[in-house]
Length: 140
Image (cartoon, rainbow, N blue to C red; front, side, top):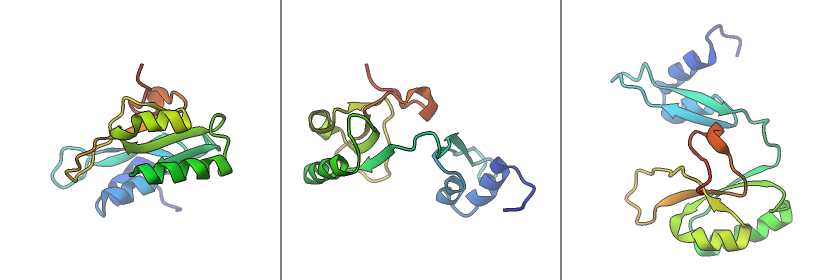
């Protein structure tokens, strides 16, 4: 980019456009810090893990049972589900099916969404991402 600002300052500048813009400056996993100022001047994104950490990490977002079954079939073609790092975002109601089809366990992190959906979303993984992903440890 050839600018002198550090990444957090660039993130704050990008935030003036949108929250997505400030998160998009980084690769990998990014946490958005909302800040308290009305003008958004203290709102920024912080990179938690860079994009090079896991070359075999697959992130999957699934809404319906049928979609989960199709995604499971696709994963079996693209990766070795038991050997690759999988991170799945879907409804809490899919917990048993996710465990059966992919061997994934729920994480403590609970994604929030702005719509009033009747189904709470959860993150499921086949590994323990630990604190590195900001409270995404697997449930015990």
